[in-house]
Image (tube, rainbow, N blue to C red):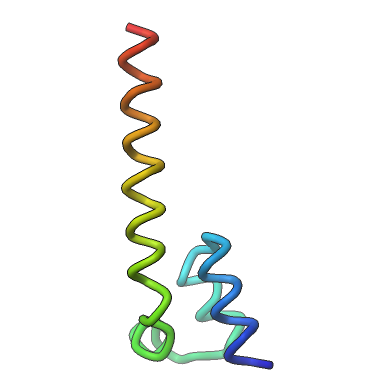
Length: 61
């Protein structure tokens, strides 16, 4: 349950530092090292969101 909880929080876009605190990890590198398997999909979502933001900003100009 702990692993599922942390994975879902990261997939939902929660800040890894906040997830780190919730899990009681002493250092964020523990959190990121343990749950890095979800980061590739997060990178893809980030790229899509950034692309949408750029398109939205260019339409306002």
